[in-house]
Image (cartoon, rainbow over all chains, first blue to last red; front, top):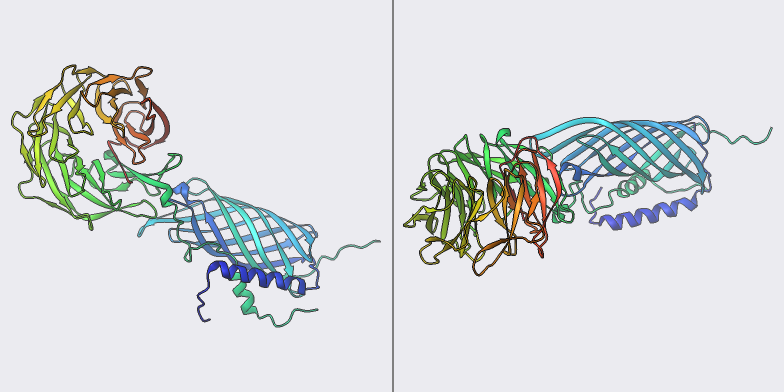
Length: 190
Length: 366
């Protein structure tokens, strides 16, 4: 792909315009899938001030998730993630509950996740330390269908708490492409 | 109506561009450096230098990840170059000086080999105002090693004639604001030796050492350069000496000495030069004085003149913000900030951080 000299903000603007432009083109309302698997990029604003850094760290990486919906409004979800920055690497897994609500031709969701995170910190080259600790996340997002099988999740926001080398209050922003199997139809009358 | 003509590639591109809402392309640390500075503490029993980040707005202290950073044997004194790129640590048991680079993004230290030889039991260290020369007091050998400083690399080169004899049991040193005189406290001689300074070359002033109280341990020079203040740990007193601007000869002024707290070990001015404080290890506090800048005579503050520190304070330095002193408390194993009221001279203990082993020296970046 030819490298484009486009500012991050301009790219964000055009992406949002493109995605917002996509949305009304889909006349397909979102069904709740029995099983949904998603994969996409993520950004973590890591609370590295607790490590004595001058500011927070910006980590880039990805998140993969699988959700099994037990009912139309409730499911179990598992997630793995990995995000990397100059001095901090973060990776882990979490699992928990997801809550769904159909809205605006798509689906709003929220989740509560618990798991473990491994943090690698390298303040100077060769001087690195690893520690695994518990983590939890509170968040949610929105997704809308672009076909029978695929949905786009343009935004997911999570408060991510990690407890490595002390405790960190982090913010994660992610997006994903979602592949869906099965559909939990709405029960209509006897 | 199905959506058409949308390639998976463009879809992925949009998703890839959506997060990462910052100007940092590779996920590095944000530029919070302007909102904080660093403090480094020599921890001899850890054979390392501890590092702390100080938030400029709150003064909160956070230990830098990976601290303390390994250095030589028993680093007892640290100084930071004004460029904020390098720090020196005098290794008391190694009889040498370590050079560390300071990582600007994390505050972590990396030692640069080889170490620079010094005399026996080096420390404290002192930089001149232009950071051209580093002075190392060699307490056991009774000498002063003087090094020229390479500002780009931090490398030290001992100057011709160094080390210079410093009389017996030198324990503290200070430069006059003009840089023309170096004052050295000789504890066992109950006196202060004075040297003229010429491009780092030291010449003992006749009459040295000049008598003060018993077991002097610390000194400071008035911002005017007209007076030297020396704390006498056995007498619990503060001696005030006028400085002859031409010869450097010291003369005790009328009204000296004045009483301090128990076992004073250090003395320091506030940024204005109007207030003077002694660090009293035995009574775990600081005594505050207002200073007549004309006569040099200090007077105990009227409302409150003693300010509690942690247990057994042994070192004090002024933070680069000018808002507080940083005090190392040996008994409490803490570093405490003592906020300065520039109007009344009162001190208020604020942020404090625990340290595994006592720190004997603290230096701050700008």
